[in-house]
Image (cartoon, rainbow, N blue to C red; front, side, top):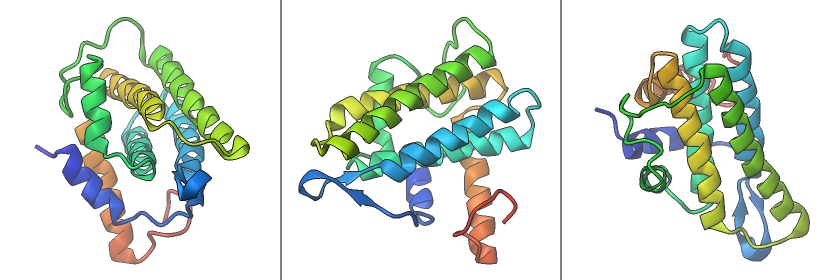
Length: 185
């Protein structure tokens, strides 16, 4: 079974985005917050059709959750541990009780959690305040948990999303097209 630590170590190999520094040189996860919102929009767009394209978008969101955590000085494991403490999910496996609602309602909750995180980062950037890492971690818990719930409803889990993302990144690295933009590189 793949671990979050293994996924994060692999994902870090494709970490090529510009960093934004805030008060006291603290890194603000501006790029991950913005990109996460874009990827979640793609999840919502592809949700009705399902398929591998949707699984790839789950992997992209997971990549940006990991990137945001790194920028905040956290590990993906720490974000997961906090989510477990909040009883949101247990691990990579399909082992949670999803609760009521369908994939669309959980996708809306995913959008809401990511929006709160992005808004918080925007305010730190705009106002020059020191980032409250513990508060941001709670936001990332929500994103990760809702991503997991949508994936489970669609028949996958975060491990399958991570594996799909790793395969895509490995292919891009082998072809020398890690940087750039677009799904078809």
